[in-house]
Each structure stands twice: as structure tokens, then as C-alpha cells.
Length: 387
Picture 1 (spheres, rainbow, N blue to C red):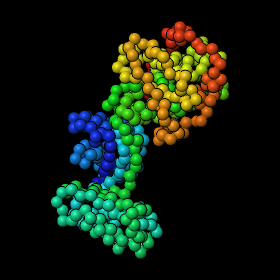
Picture 2 (cartoon, helix red, strand yellow; picture 1 turned 90 degrees about the horizontal axis):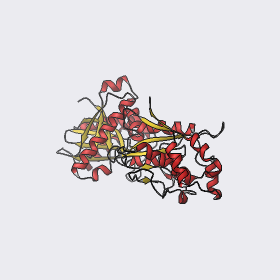
Picture 3 (tube, rainbow, N blue to C red; picture 1 turned 60 degrees about the vertical axis):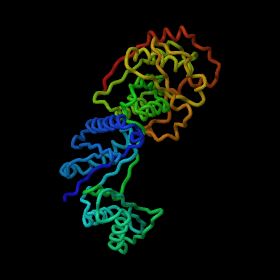
Picture 4 (cartoon, rainbow, N blue to C red; picture 1 turned 120 degrees about the horizontal axis):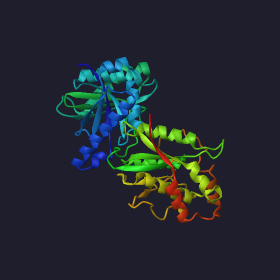
């Protein structure tokens, strides 16, 4: 039979849900994959949900791979970096369950990818009726590889801690062979847990807070607070990088955000009266204005460990209560696996911000609630659509 290249997409938490919820989440995950593929022009892929295996299968035609050899790598990058709900993916070769076909594909894959002077093992799983068991398949394929390449590549068998693992999954009349596994971010598919307004001011903590809510299945609406303190200190570069990455993993064909004129606000307050707590209250108040009467389930923003105790706002500004999430409150942002690693270290809203310096001094005369309410009511913002 013709050998086909496919991608196994594994998920974790989705499999723990009740059957009706699981079906909805699987469909949402498949839809998110399609949208993210479409955004970069990967339109040749199709997606199949296989509930009995607990995974999705992403596949395309051999002609598409021949015309674009890098298409599989591009697809794997999107799946692992920009689609939430995926624990890992593996590019696989599908062939028949005939033992000779499995032997040939296995030898070809090992010959192409295994290094010289290394150890290996074969792991097999099997369902259905076949002339071999899973253990027999491991032994037979392992013997074939060893006899073929042991002298040429100086291979040795290591069952406990091998350098290279060849995986074989046999399902009825098909066999799936692979030797690579790429980890995803896990979590739940975006769109299954509602909408969150994400405050972005340039700090790493704000960006990671939004990322963590996305990982929990929320779709976020970025609220961007742009500020140019002077010709040397600005949050423009950090915000541009953050919004670029957020655009990549948002499962929406049309991306949009709100941009707030933070210059006007901070000039009105005065830097001598600014601290992190006041900044949070104003940003949350403006965000509540923006999302008023919209179906938003909450607001998220970051926190800095030296400021969080005095940054929580006492109340919401809108008529309808909107919960405020600080997902980093008990986490170290440096220990979280996230996609924002290349953001510049010097960012507005932390060490470079006058308000943060005032926060550490703890000598700032607090802005009254009435003054904050006036600032929030008069704040200027614009709705923007991302090109």
C-alpha cells in the first residue's frame, strides 16, 4: 500500500471529561487547529477525530508534502506553539499492519534518523487481530534493525534508557510508525471557557497572565495601554512582540484589540502620585468600561511579587461584577513554559516605570477614589482590527 504521512495530536485534560463535554472540546480543538492553519496558509490539511485512540489525526496528501517538504514542520510548530489543549504531537508514517511492511518502514526510518554509536529500543502497542503480539512485534522489529545496522552504525540495545526509541502502533489493518515526539502547552482548547479581557502594559507578567488564561480555555481580548515615558523608555517594543504572539495563538479569523492612550492618563495623575496599585485600579476601571454589556467573564493582569500585596483593587467600577484574575499570584513567571521568551528585559510597567519606583518607596500620597473615577470616565481608547 502507499505509505501516508500523518500527525498524531494527543490531548490530556479533554480525555477526562464526560462524553458530551469531551465531544464538544474535541470539535473545538479541531476547529482551532483549522483556524490557525488557515492563518498561515496551511489549507491542505484535514483533521480526523478518533475518540477510541484519544487523539486527533492531522493529515494531508503525499502531493502536498512533495510540493512543500517543510509543510510537516510548519504544522508541528503551529500545533505545539499556538494551539492550546495539545499535550504532544508526533509525525507518523501510516502503512499496513503486514509484518513485512512494518519491517521495511521501520528500517528506513531508523536509517534516516538514528545516529552512529547509539542505543535503541522498539516500543509497540497493538489492538485488533494479528499474527503477532505487541511483545513479539517489538522483538521481531528490534532483531531486524539490529541485524541490519548493528555493524554499520555500531548500534546496541538498551531497554531501560535508550538514546533512540522507535514507536509502532498497530490499529486493526494499519500500522503507525514514528520516532519523534514534540510537547505542546496542554490545557484546554480556547473557546471552551468563555472570554477574558487581558490587560497589556508591556510587562512580562501581564503577557504571561493572559497566556495562562488562554491555556485554561479562555479566548482573550487584548486591552493595550501604550506609553512613551521619554525618548528612551517606552513599552512599544514589548507590546508589539506580545501582541504579535497573542495574534498567533488566538483562534479567530479576524483579530482585534483596544488601544488606550496611557500618556494622557499618566500625565493627568502625575508621576509623583503614581504607584502600581493606582495603575491597576485605573487599568481595570478602563477595561470594565470597554467590556461593559459584553459577554466577558473576567479580566486578567499580571503581578510583581514586590507589589502584589497593595495592588488588588477594592471594588469594580462597572455596574455588573466582573471577576479579576491574577494567575501569577502564587507562581514564578520565570519557571513557566511560555512563548514570550524573546521580549526585551527592560520593560515599561516594572523597573523602568516611575510608578514602580514609587511603589517600592511606599511614600506616595494615594490618589482618591473620586480622582480615579474621573480619570476612568474620561479615558480615551480606540477599537482596532489587526491586519
